[in-house]
Length: 118
Length: 113
Image (cartoon, rainbow over the protein chains, first blue to last red):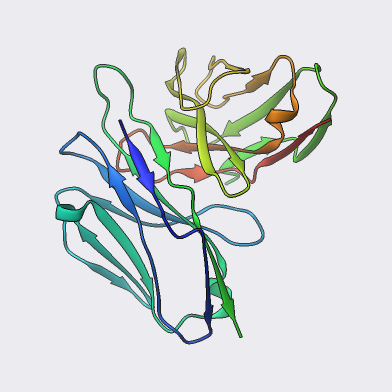
């Protein structure tokens, strides 16, 4: 069965520090997709990035970077030089293609609440 | 382009009452999802649909019902509200491929007392 674990419930950092949010997933499929979403204090959910299981290249977008390691079933998210605007809850999610028993659903981890202190 | 629209934004129900949470999308997405978000628990999948007339249970379907008669609409029905259903409910849609990101509505905050 699918499962997404985000062991860090809450993290506090001082502005300009780097921070890494961990995501570990479980799946029986060889084809799957991983996502990160951001939920700022205003409550909306914003898509940040997706990665498919065949692409283990790390990705960098500005101050954000993602490290996908299939060997450890992890898809970690690093914010460099954190800013107060990065304060939010961050969710990791897993999507699999349809199977004999289900259609392609998207399962979320419990989220990590990040507070960046000025 | 409205995207995913959820109504109402807030609702207070008494125990045992029924209500329908509305969700509509204008992106012609086949796939639609209902999640609930409890504090510290992340997003739990309630029901989802892969097209008109096709729905399936998610992780926490008990106490809820859905129907999908059109591509645009995916209402969530609570038949006998219980305090355990106090939560924030999010509707989402996506184009239909498993690598497509979800587009979320702004949520409905429901309190059952």
